[in-house]
Length: 192
Image (cartoon, rainbow, N blue to C red):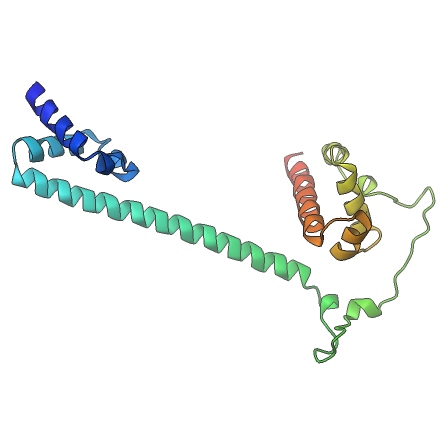
């Protein structure tokens, strides 16, 4: 038996790159596959060699299918999220009045802004809008910059570009911070 192990080990030493491949390692984790490899190498058993080939082809096909399915699921979940995000963003008021016009004025821009008086009875911050204490706690943990972004977006109705100009950062950064903040608040609401 030690002679058999020595020969398989010698074969593995002779082909280190092949046997260091994660796919091959995973395939050889099964005892049956190790035994077939030993029989194919040591005893020059053609049936064991053929069976080993068949088992590896099936194993490889299964791995490829799992990888492909995983990629598809990831791709479709991203595409689905992008479509849903776009549908939420594109409200009726965001539609341009005239597509030939370069200014691309929207219906929402024609509606006069209503400014609420900021007295003691009116809501003045995002924190006052939050329905649960867990959401308030999460909001309090935000940086001042993130709180300012939410306040400007919610009450000032500023765009990402306008907020970025006020905070001296990029609109992309504003968008990311805003999305992260809303996700954290949503998580607190769902889990609270």
